[in-house]
Image 1 (cartoon, one colour):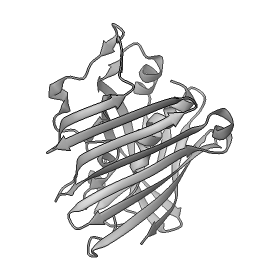
Image 2 (image 1 turned 90 degrees about the vertical axis):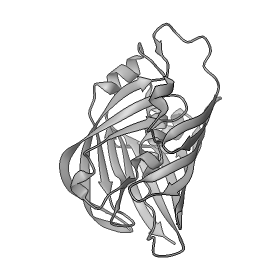
Image 3 (image 1 turned 120 degrees about the horizontal axis):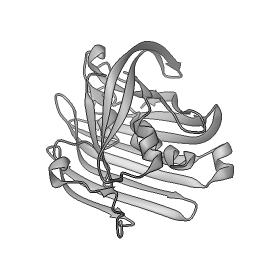
Length: 262
């Protein structure tokens, strides 16, 4: 896995959802959060995400593109989106989509959910002639799962419980479990938010839809990722504001730079 692939995968799979819903006491509000991405301190990308809460419905739409040094290495751009219902304990996705391109290659994914179960999924390009080391996704592994966007929007009023969970992700290609454990608290400050952040150590466990011989995935599965969650728009929803992912060329960081509410 190259740093460019890791940027795409983690920024869309992990940091892209770093947007919290707005105050539910109003009919409709939009929270816009900006992000920057860097490798060993050098800027390589940027992202912007809008989250809308409208009654018992929610939606997230985001854009990602290369920037700074990343623009010199690769022309990368993508969009991601999810919509669904707001429940008492979580955000229940119904429709998830991802569309991104890097240089002359393009990937698309569409996934439908109902009650936490995948009901339909399509990806492009389709996998052809998998290697003998390829581990397919089993139908039984597509129950009680979440998409990569709403999956990291953690609905709880107890900051101490944020890291006490495993997040079962499915994006149309792969099933991955993100196992969270507590690593303390930090203070976080940016335009639009200043306050505590809950720090989680995260390890990745591949479940299905991956190549067991992948050096990049095997390397990442042995590393500890760190994600900071903060209630940037309402007290009972924690979302990522900072992530640090080890790579073979140095740490990839994803950091919220501003948040605004309309």
